[in-house]
Every structure is written in structure tokens, then in C-alpha cells.
Image (cartoon, rainbow, N blue to C red; front, side, top):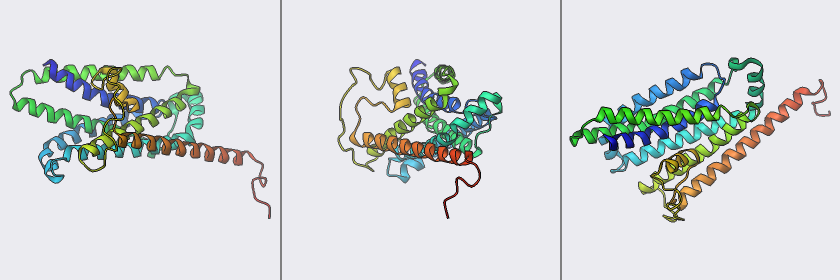
Length: 283
């Protein structure tokens, strides 16, 4: 039972950490619970469908179906998180002012919330499909106490995810959106790095060096802190060169996009503040 609980715990923790960051990043947004709950439900349903089609996936990509599927899910999540980061960079100050004035009456862009719903669904989909496949395998092997191990793992993983969420809510409001946006950028970069690892395993991209360094002596990938660092900031004790390339490229692209969005939003605000006619070019 405890082996099952440990594996389920690690998978649930990965999804729970992502959901916690998303939940914190949408603090005060009306109906965010509906979006996040809907994303979790979609992910669970999708995980069951993926598990049932595992043989087809493996045959479709010459035995590397699970790796290709995981990489595709992660890269899709990176794109959606990136879109939200850029959107929040241009609207964060406005949302902060609205939150201070109206609390839970904040209205975020519907398209941004749909993107984050998809991120939650993809996180649950990826980790849930791995849990279902593992449990099917354990059941076929005659393992006992599957439901007990599953329950312990889910509760423990969800509890740690909630602890992170509660900690994020303690950030002062004036710094809140900047802090959560930075966490989303690191989360996206870490997901991109993990996607690169799956693509290397599937022999789709070159490794560019299989082990740039080994910091397992300091923080092992399999440890609880290592697992949390892997999800939140993309930590890998033995990264390949392609993983670092994906990580750095994602950081650079999202940082550049967020900076452009902030500048564009600031220019628009300044232009609206000018008296009529002063913002028009001379004839």
C-alpha cells in the first residue's frame, strides 16, 4: 500500500502545485472556482481516456507514445501560461486597484481564465493518466490495497498543494501579481525543460550533452524538496543541454513578452491621461 501511496502522492503533488499557483494567480477573480474545478474535472476525464488508449498511443509513435504525449501536454501548458503572463503584465495594475476597491468583484479577461482552465486540465490530465496507468499495472500484477494507497496519496499531495496556496495568499497585495507572474514564468520554463527531457527520451531532439552537472548530492530528484523544486522552477539534478536550452528560451521569451506588454499598457494609460488633442501627431 505504501509504495502505491508514495507514487500517487508524487504525481498528485505535481498537479497540485501547478493548480495552487494558478489559483493564487487568479486571486479575487469572479468564478475562478468554477474555472479551476472545471479544469480538474476535465483533466480527470481526459486521464481516464488516455489510460484506456495507452496501447494505441504506443503503437502510433513506435513505442514512444507516452513520452510524446507528455511533451505535447507540457508544451501546450507552456503556451497557455505564457499567454496569461503577457496578459497579466498589461492588466495587473488595473486588477490590483480593482481588488483593493471591490475585493472579489474583480473581473479578469474571460479568455485569460479559459487559458488557465486549460492549464489546470492539462496538469491533471498528464499526472492523472500516469496514475491510472500505474494502478492498472499494479492491479494486473495482483497488488493489494489499491484504493487505500490511492486515497492516502491523493490526500497528502493535495494537502501540500493547499499549503503552498495558503502561503502565496500571505504576499502583500501590492506585490502579489508581480510575485505570481514571476512564479508562472518559472513554472512555464520548468515545464518546457521537462518537455525537452521527454522529447530526448523519444529520440525526437538531440540531448546536447546528457549530464551537464550532477547535484544529486545536494538535492536529489526523487526527494520531496527536489520534486517540488522540479515542478515550481524546473530543477533537475542531472539536466541535459537541450533541457537548459528550452528553459532559457522560455524564460527569455516570456520576460521579453511581459516587458513589452507592460510598456504598451503604460503608454496607453499615459496617452489616455493627456488632454484631447495633445496625444495627436502634429499635422
